[in-house]
Amino acid sequence: MSTTPIAPAGRTEDTSTLVNRLWSYCELLRHSGVSTLDYVEQLTYLLFLKMADERDRRPALFQQSKKAGLSERLVPEGKDWQSLLSMSAEPLVDHYERILRNLGSRPGTMLGEVFLKAQNKIHDPAVLERLVKDLINPYSWNRAEIDLKGDAYEGLLQRGAEDRKTGAGQYFTPRPLIDAMIDCVEPQLGERITDPACGTGGFLIAAYAYLVKHFGDELYSDAGRKLQTGAITGYELVRETARLALMNMLLHGIGSSEGRPLIEVQDSLAKPPKRFYDIVLANPPFGVGSVTGEAYTSRTDFWAQSTNKQLNFLQHIYNLLDANGRAAVVLPDNVLFEGGAGAEIRRKLLETCNVHTLLRLPTGIFYANGVKANVLFFDRAPARSSGRPGTEQLWVYDFRTDQRFTLKQRPLRREHLDDFVRCYRSGQGKHSNRTPTDRFRAYSYEELISRDKVNLDLTVLQSSASTSSALPAPDVIAQGIVEDLEAALAEFAAVAQALKAGSALRR
Image: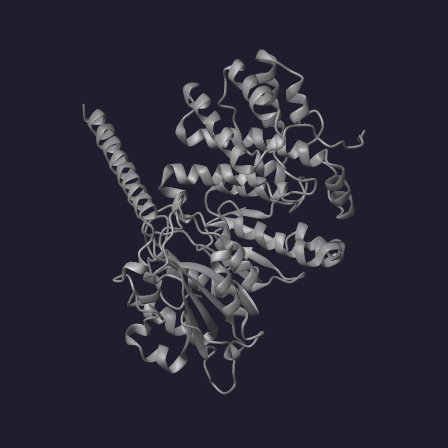
């Protein structure tokens, strides 16, 4: 029997305070024997149940779910956060483990995928009870009546990536950059949107937030309801990361707990796509082409065989696009200049697509220090009977020269990208009408194709770093040095640990 939802009680604080508090709980789990690789996952199970409870009990969100035709609750009664609060000691541990098993035994649903094979690793009843009742429950993790963004939840994921400095952290796309990319692509209601390497779902959630902001009640039309059943989907290779993406999507109001999973666990590069999309947004992972490091020779739809994962993703994204579909992709510098297959892929991309915008990104915005990356915007051009290439001009915005950011002292903010978004839109829908600036200029197709190896490693500004006025403040320089040293120490520690483990095995 359903009950009328009530607004949850609890102290509401700013996101950074909540994230810092939650992160401090990790120390409690470490001392309880939970490994570094597991504590974020264990906390996210509990945090998901708490945030789902808040969402289920907010009247405004309750009515929105009904209006959208979704299940009224994310988590069934008796298996939810409130049921945990009613128990203590060993019965609490037993009940929590039953919840994980029950929610994970719902095949073919988003909730079932979230908890698939989930295991409790917090076996000390006192620790679990303290986490549930004293550390998580007293606080409201959503800051506003209609806030579905789950900022605190995402902040935990981000903090985990930052703490590791390597691995997933290097792929974690800064939220301001995601938002700027979405503002440029401008998703429309009824369009199919995907991310073939979705990670924790940042691009998909930002695209949905854009649609909510710009289309309002139209979301409850037939086109809007398709957002809950497959208009926004993602693909992810790592099951645990896909689990986090599904949690994130449900908390943001995308999909239904009893509906089919909107994230598929698969190697996106292994086979040609079966579905096609109007928009592709992605930050493909770094590294070699496949799990084994070999080229994807089975992909006959690829223009060239390569072991470079980003080049393969670039070809895959082209194949994902429907006619006139558009893409925005974060890519490292090597994709712009690598020879061999790289040159062939760039040539084919310029011929078959309208490759219209390249955003050169500064260093210091990703968790992996020194990463040099870009955002490439292109549209799949219809075939031209004249034989003309799809690209007429590539506009390059230089956001790298004389731009300095650090993760802590001067982090990237959305307003830092305002000028780029203005330049991107300056042609009012026609790229050839754009207005050039000191950071924004166009290269013609003829210029691009005549460059050695079709090199797209293009610049607009000459660095003025030799002048004292171009230098950042001393505290920014110092913080950058500190972060570089911390990253180096982390790498040395990992090497030392590996050597120690190897020595132990040889004894």
